[in-house]
Each structure stands twice: as structure tokens, then as C-alpha cells.
Image: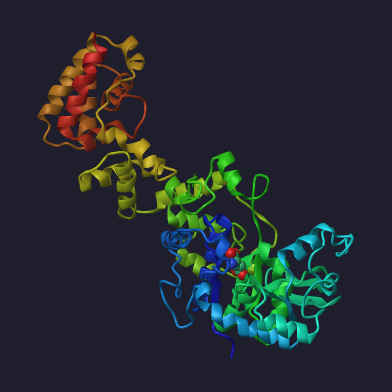
Length: 513
Ligand code: GLU
């Protein structure tokens, strides 16, 4: 029987969640849902020195916003908890000790000074080779350091009984080839001699990422590991740990996801700042520096568009189709179709997706988001019916949700300035009379809608033998102040009789003197 699909996203709470991290979440989520599996969120917080206040809550907010809610997590619970690695501290030691006992790991008692010396006196202690320009604690060096491979067992026991500070390191085999099959890349091989003896258990008893990730993926019965390409170089250590501790048959299947590329190689936070686009899912405020990095949400992206473009950064369904709902993505997604090459992020294209999604969503789905955007700008208390009409009129003109303000403020704010230069040079007595008549006509109208307003306008024009083109622009400028906005009569309908007449009257005083 094949294993139940269980995948995990395992962030370290160290800061904002960038596009790469969110795409890892998305691919894990889609794969789990497609295969009727579980999506687990595990917080990898064993490196206390990198812990950043608020980062964990922030990760949950990003997942919630994007609609990628885990089945199991520190806040959703589950039967494989705890889901914070820091709360699992006691679990890991026994595996590290087992590795020592079986000769795959060793105690290392080197002091900070010993390690400094090793790094800075390469010729004396370490060995510099072409492959290994800066010495690292590896098979070349370990026999020259203070560890249970070089000290006698009496000395080791004494140091342990005296509780001397020590770590446990993996003993990387010399000149072995470690191979595994990556779902995206195929067979991947590593020469173990090039990998250092990574610390597995730190002096404070906390595991490092390498030990914790393998133990937890085992204990949490993870069937597939999808993670960023930056972890590929750690894979040989993980494969060996799987082999030594649980057996390779138990090992999950792995896929290392390609990098997301910015204008100059790997997409970075700096690119976002430099080119003015977001790289984080949601705005992130660094608690130490108070630096704020704007996120896709705050920039005005819909979560539907966000996950849509993200899914296509490195994957397609084999057709030209670009717009996918989450349900369609779940149905179509396959990890085998993820490309191994880096995926280039194109902000203009991301905006295109958002525009398509704003067009695609109905008014009801957009309403609350638009209310938020307008509220930010001080526009509140809009009647529901009015808001719905406004959204219908302007949504196709909006690329970002924040554009709803630019496109619709004209309905809620009486102009204070008018583009007089566009009207005044051609203003004349006939036009003045026309608008006086139009005002009278509109005053009497009990059928206030765009169609009848346009009909009345045209009738008066016909009676006066004038040209609609000469009068439409002045009317628009009267109503909104400039040459913008949707259809003039649609605007008048939404404004209502009183406000329309008020605006015409105000503007006329500007044009006629
Ligand atoms: N804790 C690692 C990170 O912060 C997770 C790597 C993995 O998924 O194995 O990205």
C-alpha cells in the first residue's frame, strides 16, 4: 500500500515571506489537495538566535490571506504535534546519540577559539584544496581537532561527565557517492568528501536544522518534501541521516523547486526596493529596524491572482491556459511538470493577472475589498446600491485593487477644480443656454437613469441643432472636473439628480466668467 500523501511547509520564523517561500507553500498545498493528503505547517525555530518576534504570526496571516490554510500546524493542531521544533527539543538527542553509538557521528569538544584557529590557520591545521578553498570541519580536518574520534574513551567520558560544552557532528564518509532521485531533476549525486561534518546537536541541546528536519519528517510521516533549490546542497547530509536512522525505504520523495529569478539573478528583497515591486506576500515590518517592506496584498493584489501567477512561476499545465482558479490548479497541478530551470518573475505580467482577476470576479466578491481601499482614503458610508454600480462601472479599468480609489473617487467627491482650459476657449452663449435648458429638463426628470438622461440630452441637442461632441466633454468636466471616468450618463445616474445638478451649477460659474 502506498503511503498517505503528507507534505509540509517548514519555515523558520526569521522575517517576511517572499515569493519563493509562498510558492513552496502553494505547490505543497496543491499537491496535498490533489492527492487527498494532508498539508502540515511546522515551525523550524531551533535556531533561537535567528528568531524574529512576530514572524510566526505573520506567516499564518500570509497563508490565510492566500487561502492556503494548513491541515495541521501549531494553531490548527493535529495528531503529530507539537509543531514547533523548539517544543520537541527532548526528542532529538536520542537520535543523535544513536548515530554516535553506531559510528556515524561523534562528540566534538572544540572551543570557539579552536574553531577560529582552524579557520584562520589553514596551512597549520586545515587543508586547502582546489575543491575546498576555505577549510571546513570535514574528513581532512576532524582528526586534528578535539573530538571523540581523536580523544581516548576515558577522556571523552570524563568530558561528558563534567558536562563540558560539546556538539554532535555527523561523520561524513570519505569518497562515497550519495544519490537520490529528485522528482523534478531526476538523479542527483554528491561526493561526500566535499561535504563538511555538519553539527547535528548543538551545545545547548537543540538540534540543528539537519537533524531536526529528518527526524520530524520521519515522525510526522511526511511522504513528499518540496522545498527550495537552496536546500539541495544539504540533501546528501539528509539522505545519509535517513539511511542511518530510518532506512532509505522510509525516506520521502523529494523535489527541489527552482529559484525565482529577478532582473539580476535570484529575486531578492533588494530587487523589490530597487524596482518598486513587492517580493513579500504581505507587508512586513522588521521589528528591529522598523523597516517596512510592502507586500502584494497591500499593493492591491487579489489572493486569487497572487496564487494564479505564483503557480505559473515554474509550472504550466501543458497548454497555453493562464487563468486558473484554485480548484482548477488543484485539479491540474503535477509536480513532474515543474521546470528545473529558474522561473523569471515579471511584475508587469503579475499585474496583468490581477487585472484579469478583477475583471473576472463579480461585484459581490470585490465589494469588501473596495470598501477597505476607499476607507483607507477616508471615503466611508457609501450606500450599497451605489457602491455596486460604481464597482460595475470601473472594475475593468482597475489593475490593482488600490486603483479603485483613482477610478471611483469622482463619484464621492465633488470637484473643487475643473479643467477650465479644455472648455473655456470654446465656450459660448449657445452652450450656456444649452446647459440652462438641460438643467431645467433634468430637474423635472422622474426617470433618473443613464439611458433616459442621454436621450433627453440628445433631444435638446437636436432641437438646438448642436453637435453632441461639443457638449459631452463640457458635461463630463462639469461632473468630474477633468477628462476621465466612465460614461458621462452612467456617472450622472450614480451621482443622482441632486448632486448632478449641483455639480453642473458649480462648474457653470467657472466657465461663464
Ligand atoms: N526551515 C527551512 C527553511 O526555513 C526548511 C527547509 C526544508 O523545507 O527542508 O526554509
